[in-house]
Length: 193
Picture 1 (spheres, rainbow, N blue to C red):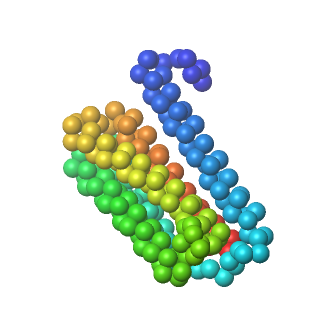
Picture 2: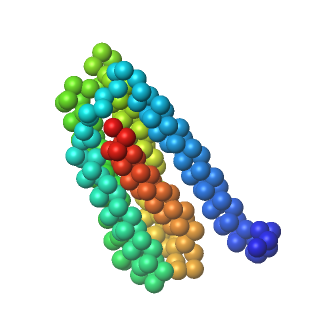
Picture 3: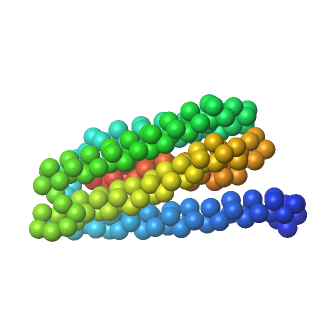
């Protein structure tokens, strides 16, 4: 397909989607770098090989998957021009995103309770990597929550319909990426100990 064809609106929509995918590509490279550094650092003498990921991190996997499913149902409702159900599913996805962040901080609390901090005399390189990777992911979840909030506000302002879903699709794509990223990170951290 010739990307120069189509209406100005179609070209604009393609450009915005492409920019999102460029951004997601750069995030993938960032997290690939951190997980690669995690693997390389695992040869250090002070590396913890018997650590257990906190249970709230596992709970977060299920929470974030359910939030993605809620967003899929929201998109389906929007395609059917059912704004009431779209808003219900969006609010659920948003609430689950907040619950995800709460769970992550509960996981951090468990790590600290085990005697490990991010930095300082009670820090350990293994746990510092886990803190870093999980915290940077939380920042991206917060950005995703902001996107969902904007989508929800725009939905209430009647800016979306089955024929006009660009903002919803962009936010949804980013949210699904953040969800898949956490599933990957959890299993990476779980199996790379």
